[in-house]
Image 1 (cartoon, rainbow, N blue to C red):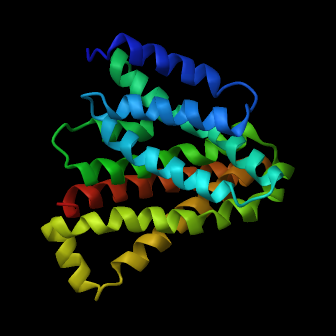
Image 2: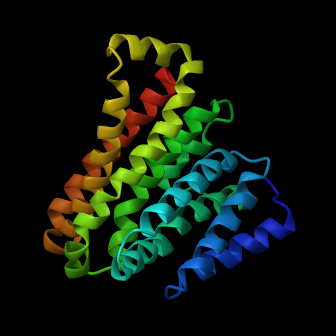
Length: 238
């Protein structure tokens, strides 16, 4: 069993409780989320890699949200109040040696991945596995439909975030080869991939209400694609 420092375990418990209640003020919400991610990032566990990445993603969320209307900000932070705990629960599972959530199992399955592999597999788990479930748990169909476009437009902030990850790929031989093979288009492809992942998650959340059977079929196909993306990370991000 992996034991985390007592302070971190208490912070983790408080964070999960915090994000399960109604939305607090933006400044307070951000402080609690960022503090919890920073604490996990400072541990000697596999979770630290994604925590460090997630911290930067939340900073991008904050910058984007500051330019939006109050209603859009409330929607975004309300969504995060359901989204972030999915990662926290995966960390808690690691600490307590409980069976991991399906989509997070590949992340914790190997202790020899390099940092970028952990980041990619973590994004795959959190976006493709957790996002649609967080959306449908927090909001009904009408609300999701109303804020669908602002949620997708958030991609502008994520493009900058993705670019900050992309600059680290030059240290990996196979990724440098991929860059040459695609004539430098791998960066554009990566951005499009992230956008496609997020659009599919919004669609899954809407289908959960409008067509549950189609949602189930699409979720199964998504799980298959997640496994393929994980194999890509294992084979090429090195």
